[in-house]
Length: 405
Image (cartoon, rainbow, N blue to C red; front, side, top):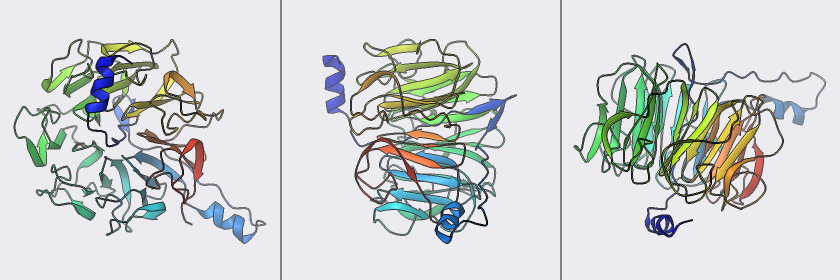
């Protein structure tokens, strides 16, 4: 780690940031919002304990916040657990939970967790947010924190949402992109003003956005043609534009097409392009998957061409391959790389030997992933109970999370 990066790391805001966004899967320009998984059928001969375990909900998607986790089950139920200082669990309290608890009885299609807030889309296309709101990141027209979901406007055409540390972006079914919250580094993509937006603002006039990922002070998104765009802070080259100049509006990253997934971390970004893996920005912990200092343009990670999903937030990155294997790299002080150690990694390290990681994937200072059977596994920091195992003990390898039956 260079002295330059070390000084920046010590001086910067250190609260754990959210997941950045999991990979957006596109087929003929259509975003696959969630994976469809099928629950197993209990054998009639099993005992009551086994039947109860088999009856527990299976998961379709997962998101990792600063110190909390939320997941949507295959029946549309929403579950959250972990740190709750801002009401980000949506359970009307600010009490931490070390085991999953359901958020109301509504059904949901998409959820994303920020550092201290959560936003989700219901099956009726409405958008709801809750938790910390000091910078207007809930989008409800106020800066008051909420311990239960509050609706964002009245639109019923929201498709997906991505929550950053202090700003939020979402895409509607018409392909328009909207952002709100903190705009100190022009991360909203609407110019230098307003400094704080507490209601959604449209980003440009494009109607072909399919995915978006919010970092600490920057944002990136993919359009239907497979082009990649970033904006906001470029203090460490996290926009991938070949320089350190900030951008007040979306700027295209190179001219390549074929981008299928992008994930914005604290000050780095990673993406999947035609099965290859690329990262750029800050590299103080090896979060780019290569050695050396920061990079201002995308650098390819190895030569593998079978990468399928990407997740990045804080200073850690994870990705899965088409063979179902899971790989992580970067900061590992809490075991968030999942390789059984707490050693920082500057190259992808495989998390266990399982080859069934084909569902959702998320990572901040803790990571979570879904396997083919709909089972959820989490690892890393557990200071707020975000691993969902009933404890606050860190894990350096994936451990299964069971939702109540």
